[in-house]
Image (cartoon, rainbow, N blue to C red; front, top):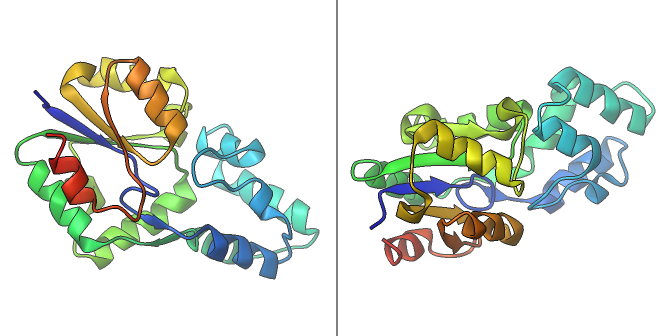
Length: 203
């Protein structure tokens, strides 16, 4: 019996637009940003950012070094925000409904610049992000990231949930593999899928 549902953020709840983000960075002088931006697992200094090893100011400075000239904070942040396109409102209605009967958590590889944009997307749909989940587990705050088992183990220890009574929903196959190895029920969900149908079919 499922008692807990853990959602990923980007690609599951928030629709991602990698092309728009890479194009925005190209326009401000970062020609090969696409080599470090992945829909599922980030690399290099981007991964350090999502693991909280560097802060927003340090991340922006690295971007400027790659570009070779000064670019204002808000322009870099806007280019980052273009990765996060929108949220289909039905998904937020689904999460709100599920929260009435299940423990609903968020487990996301993310960063503080992205979170500013994501919270705005929630508000644009009439929701406060903090109110949609019983608790949010964010990689940059936890200093760890998926697909490493330690971030799942931290969630388990802090919530006391039983993985066998928990559905983990993610769009990354490596993340799904780790969750499965720890005993979670899993759903590999693409951002094009009918999330409501797929989740309800597994409850």
